[in-house]
Length: 129
Image (cartoon, rainbow, N blue to C red; front, side, top):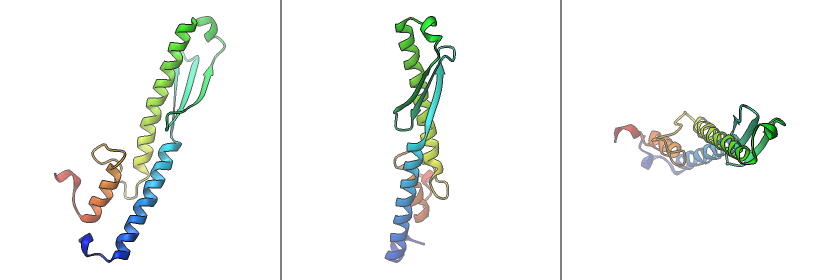
C-alpha cells in the first residue's frame, strides 16, 4: 500500500513503532561492551559501547615485567582493542534491535535501520538504486 494513501492514524502508528525501535536499538548499543587482554594476558580492559573505560585489571606481575612506559603502552593497547570490540558489539546489538531485522542498511548504524524500515513500508528495495 502506498504510504501517501494510508490513513493518518496508520502512519502515526508506524512512526511511533519506529521511535520505539530506535530507542530499543539505542539502549542495546549503549549496553554493549568489549573486553581485551594485553601484556601476555596480565592486563584486561573493558570498555562500554559509549567508549567509557569501565574496568581495568592489572595482574601484580605487570609491575615486574614492564617498565612504566611499556606498561602504559600495554594499557593503551588493551583499552583500544576493547573499544574496537565494544563498537563492533554495539553496532551488532543496534542492528538486531530493529523489528523485522532490517539491521544496518548500507552499513550506516545511524540512519540505515530507519531507512530500511521506511523503505519496506513504502515497498522500495534499498538495494535497487
